[in-house]
Amino acid sequence: MFGELGLGTVVTYYASHEWAKLSLNQLGRPIGDEHAMSRLSSLGQFAIKWYAAAAAFVVTGVAAGGWIFFSAAGEVHVSWQRPWFALCAVTGITLCMTPVWALLEGCNQVSNTYAYRLIQAVALSATAWIAITLGAGLWTSSLSGLVGLLFAAMLVSRRYGPLLRAVFLTQPTISRLRWRRDILPVQWRFALSWISGYLMFSLFTPVLFHYHGAVIAGQMGMTWALVSILTMLTYSWIMPRAPTFGILIASEKYAELDRLFFRIASVVIGVTTLSALVIWLLVYALSQFPNPFAARLLPPLPTALMLAASAINSATIPFAIYLRAHKREPLLVLSLVGAVVSAAAFVFLGKKYAADGIAAAYLTTTAALAPFILLLWRRKRREWHMPAKSGETYFPRT
Image (cartoon, rainbow, N blue to C red; front, side):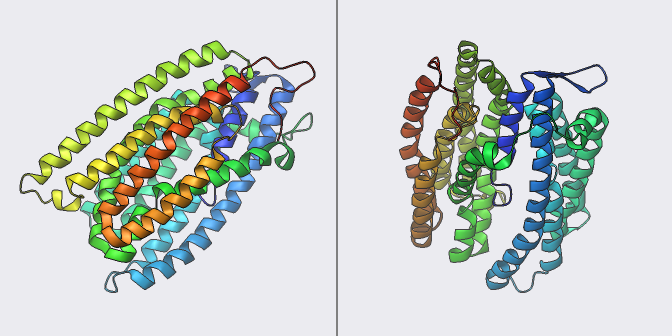
């Protein structure tokens, strides 16, 4: 999050607006408006440079930060140092694939992109199970991540080699997107929102690990993996349509955009609500019977609070994606306020009431933010979709 600073999402939305004037021929090469192709190339080449620097930051900064954190609070008899540095290195290399995925999604190659990422996930999971079985221990994450990366690189290069070479190797001479003028005004808002997301959704386990030890932190981590299924379901429905949102916005087909959005949003809300109930019933059933797996999860009450909060958050995600597909970030202030309040609540209530306090804080802050997100969506949708007056640009740069 701190290395990427939201650029992946920016690349997807910007690429979708350019792809409205482009397409692929039978050889897999991009054809269409030369100015749009030139801008797309400049966007892709900037993204590659950014992620290369971000990867270096992750490998060095996160490795050093983890060394300090785990040395102060970790188990002295666990040999974690070399696996940790290996994981940081693999994560840095994997980060370099992010602009490729973002660009392909923005170019409306959603079905193949998600199919390849599914194959990558299956390869990663299979490698993890094999590594655990063979006793790889803490090396498991590095090994599985490396195998998943190799599968992804092989699949993408075979199918989209011509497109990626045209984007990354062609010098943009006709027209180009410039970072300071075109990208930065949007990216810095996305960056602050992404950092806010870390404070709102990734601070649970470190706080519990620091104040209450590895056992309850492990329970929170396992429970959060289940709770995160709701967010994964939401993004699996909405993100494949995000490039289509951008294309429809660039073409000013707002009625078609709204029909597609409302259909997807209704499905997302129904599916995530039902899934939250099913997951909680599973956790409750495990807690009622002697089961070693139940000891790895939080009790039913904090799990219910976490699931309720995640369901509310998942219901607001389609509205956020809709707004950001306009190459704007109107949710910045709400994200910052939510991050500050959430972080303070997690530390204070987590220290005092452990997992129950964190779950209650997560539900309270999420429920408080949701109505403001919906009101902002309604206002911006009405404002942005009004016909532009004579002499005005549809999307001002600032």
